[in-house]
Structures are given as C-alpha cells and as structure tokens.
Image (cartoon, rainbow, N blue to C red; front, side):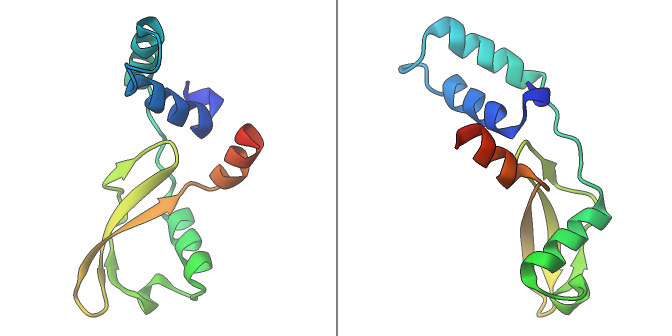
Length: 109
C-alpha cells in the first residue's frame, strides 16, 4: 500500500472506517493493509526548507524559538513537529510531504 502512494493510503483509511458503506471483506483488507503501512520520516533539513518556503522566511528562527528535529508523528500525507513560537507559545506544525499535492492531483484528477 505504501508503494501506491498517499492517495491509496487515504482511500484505504476511508474504506477501513466505513463498514456500513463498503463490503466487510474490503473493510478487513484495508484495515490489514493499513496495519502494515509505515511512512518514512522526511529529513529535518527538508522539513525546515518546506516551512521556510511556505512562510516565505529565510530561517525558521524568524518564527520559532525552537522546532523539534524529530517528528511527533509521520503519516502518508504529512508529518508533525512540536515547536515553540518566539512569543513562547507551544505549537504543533503539520508539514505536508514533498510531492504529495502533485501526486494527489494526478491520482484523483
């Protein structure tokens, strides 16, 4: 399932959690496939670059007092990192995986 990409992982999640809509065998198959999925971690340097591009900043230090290098979670479409803003508020930053938007457009377009 991982090799098919985020679109198919997301579709499997929908089916696995829709037992009233999909046949039981399909629900079981999707649940089983999802249990075997593991999204690789996007390297921190790439995460930092994605954040800077999205926020149109030169460095994450312009916005964040700190940003955790290791993700709190990593999934098919995004991963999340804990951080602290410059004003001291704790935040969770969701970073969409590189190329996911384009892949979803191709798969679902």
